[in-house]
Length: 104
Image 1 (cartoon, rainbow, N blue to C red):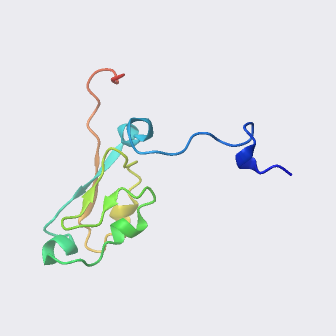
Image 2: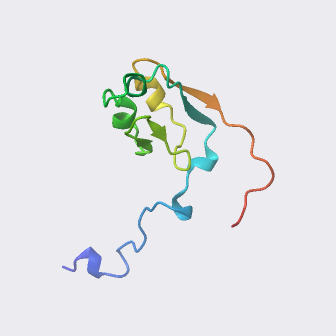
Image 3: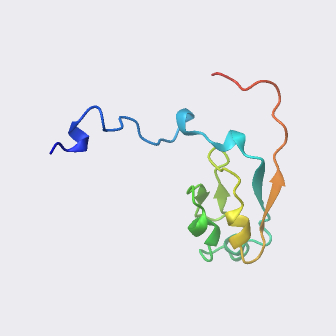
C-alpha cells in the first residue's frame, strides 16, 4: 500500500497558513472588545486566568499582559466572551466594510 504522502493524487499539497491566504477575520459579523479594567491579567499585572486564550478555537488570543486578540484571524464566534469570568470581553457589531474588498 502506498503512503498517502507519497501519492500525488491523494495528498493535499496545501496547508493552513497565516498570512494573506489565511486571513479570515474580514467576514465576521461581531468582534470582541476587551475592557482592560475588568480583565484579570491586565488588572492584576500578572499572568492569571487566560480562559479566553484557553477556549479560543482559532488560537487568536495572545496570552500576555495585556491580553490581545488578533482581529485579522478572529471569526467572531464569541466563545472568549462567554468564557470570561469577569465579562471583560463583549461582542460588538462589526462596522460595515467601506467599498469593495481589495484585491491587493
